[in-house]
Length: 432
Image 1 (cartoon, rainbow, N blue to C red):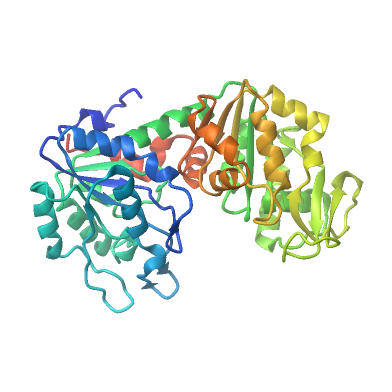
Image 2: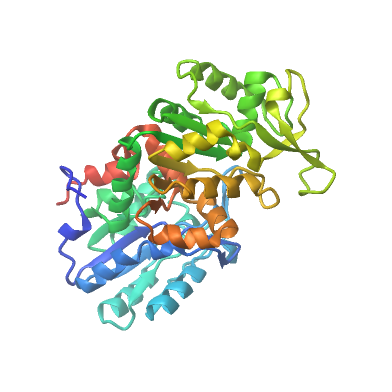
C-alpha cells in the first residue's frame, strides 16, 4: 500500500537487534480450542519479516471476554488462555516460545507486567528462545481501563521493547495494547494491517454494481454500518434477527425473539430506506419455527412473507429458505454484481443452515465479482458448511476474507479506517 503521511509501515523500520512488541488479533480460542487458525496464519508474514530483519519478537493478543464488566472481576483460566496459540505456532513454525506468568490479585486479574519477565527477554536476546508471547492482554486490569491504570499498563508494555508493531486490524477497540502503547514507542503498521486497509478500499470505492449482505443477532450492533452501507451500496440484503426486525417494523408481523429496542431501531431504519427505494432486497421465503431447540420435523415450515398480512404471527424466523435465492430478481442482482461484501450468517446456528449455504453458493457462482467476506462467524460458518469453497476462497484473487468482521463494519461506519482509534494512533505517532 502507498505510504500515508505520518503512517509508518513495518518495511520502513530498522529492526536489526531490536525488541519488537507485536499486537496481533489471535482471538481464535474458544474454551481452550482453536477452531480456525486463519487469523494466526494471516500474521505469519509479519512475524517472518521481523525475524528475517534481525528483530526479536514479543507477541500479545486478547482472547475472549474474561472480564465481568458488571462485577469488575477478571477470570483467569484455560478457556481464555493463549497457550493453544503458542502450541500452534511452535508446531507450525518449529520455534520455541515462552510465556511469562504473573501474580493474580484475587479476582482482579494481573495488575501489571512484573520484573520476572526480564529473564525471558534476556533469553530472547541471547537466542535461547525464539519469541515471547505475553498472557491474554485482557487478563491485565489495565488493558481496558480508561484511567491512569490503563496508561500505566501501556507504559509497562512499551518498556519491554524498542518498537511497536500493530498487526491487529480486528482489534479495533482503543485499549492499552492497541492505542496506549503508541504514546511510548515508535509504532508501525504490520503487513496484515496494511492488507486489510488496502482491501477496505474495495468497499469504499467498489466496482459497481455493489451488493452488501449483513446479518446479525442484534440490530443495535450493526445499525450505524447499515446506514452507511445503504448510502454506499447499490443493493443491501439483510439476514438474521436484523431481517426479522426489519420485516416486523415494515409489515407489522409478529416475530418472536425481537427486543423492543431492536424493533424501534428497525422502524427508524425502515423510514430511512424510503430515501433509497428498491435498495433493500427483500428475501421472500423464510423458515419459521415454533422452537429454538433445533430444526425439528413438524415444528418448522417455509413461509412466503408476501402472502402474510399485518398482525400475522410467524413464530421464530430461524433462516432464509433456499427458494429466496432462486427468485429471479434476487438471482439476477447477485449475478450482475461486480463487488459483493458479506458479513452474514443467515440462519440460527448450528441447526438452520440452508440460507447461508444458498447465499455462499450463489455468490461463488458469480465468476466476475470481487467477493469480500467479513471475519468472525461469517468465516467460521463458510468453513463449517462449505469447506471446499472456504479452501478455494483462501487462495482465489476473487476473494478476500477479512480477519475481523466487526472491525470492517466499524471502518464502514466511520467512513475511513483512518478514523479507527488504533489506526489513528499509528497516524499520530511522533516517534519516527
